[in-house]
Amino acid sequence: MMNRYFLDKKFVVFYIILFVCGIVNTNASTDSNSKTEILQDTITELDEEHEMWNDVFDAAVNRRDFRKYKERDVEITPWIKDATLPNPDNAALLYYQAFLLRPEPNMATSLQIDKVLKGAESDRQMRMYLGHCLPMIRCAELASQIPQCSWGIWYETEAEFGISSLAGEVRNLSFILAVDARTLVWLRSQLAFVQGAPQTISKALHTDFESVLYSLQSNPNHLGKLRTSLLENEEDKQAAKVLRSMTDEDIIARASEPYRHCLESILRVMDSDMSYDRKHAKIKRLIITLEKEYGDDLAAGYVISLCAGRLLEWYEIEVVHQAHLNGIKAAVDVYLKTTEIGKLPDELPEGLPKDPFSGLDFVFEKTDEGFVLRSQSKSFPKYLKNGFQFKVQNKSISTITTKSVEK
Image 1 (cartoon, rainbow, N blue to C red):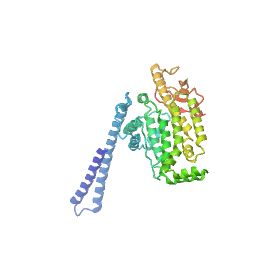
Image 2 (image 1 turned 180 degrees about the horizontal axis):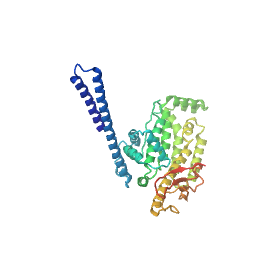
Image 3 (image 1 turned 180 degrees about the vertical axis):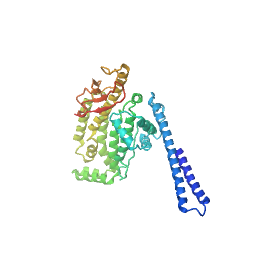
Image 4 (image 1 turned 60 degrees about the vertical axis):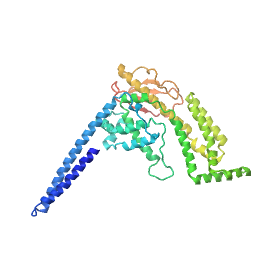
């Protein structure tokens, strides 16, 4: 970029010199139209030369980035293993930088990204674009190693950048990372390094809880209406007197403590060695008990209704995510075994990640296009009942395609 700046600057100087020389050396008898034509022709020639050098520069950058991506393609040891994490300890700051580093693809590249995500192979042009994306990819990889991630979105404003904008940026980033992950050698090295995200659900639930409390604390109208409702529904005069003497902090504590204690119990269940079915059932009982004991309390019920309603759904999403990750890890080893013996193996290699729904190995079945990994659990979501399907083309590892087939 800097070289191009100096190149453009040089041509600007050429234009100025040309203009001055044209004024100095022009004979008084020269027709003004002729002077204009000569000047325009010269400027056109310089524009064409400028464009030619721009093309040369772009080609050199493309070759360089393609070479860098090719070199990265054969890396076995993840570079982030020895990387120094930046301060402050907040992954969101790096993700925001990654968003800014993403090169905007042209229409042809965007269409090719879509094709690759649907199973097509990455061509030279795609790898060249991924080479341009390397700074963004490395920034995102580094961010993924930082457990703390606070996006710092100000929910109380009508700013143009909000959750929907963030989701769009994350989606664009995920598309690039998904295309990048088509390179099997790199994918295996990264998956070997990734240990999963067992605390992701914990952080998400805590963040959701804290955002509800923050909304209550930062909005006097909400807090005032809650206090008024509590007084209107309190028939005991002594209890009403106590309510009037309560500070805002006391009201917030009354609203938050029941769910806070329940959430800690739920997270302990999630982290236990119980099966998914037993965890799901116990978490459901804890939520039902919480709602029975505190559902009639307007303060506690306010937080419970906002936080507990989708807790089980989020937990299932987390387990599905882990199932996808474990399924891809298992599939990579199947692909590697296929290249080793020249055909698909008859059974899964030993020591592969297990299905988090059943706690057992995935069921391995060959298909006309490749193979499928299924869960042995009856609790496996219906939309995933046909398992994770993987394609094998020409008995090699030319592409990897995973999809969950709906009924």
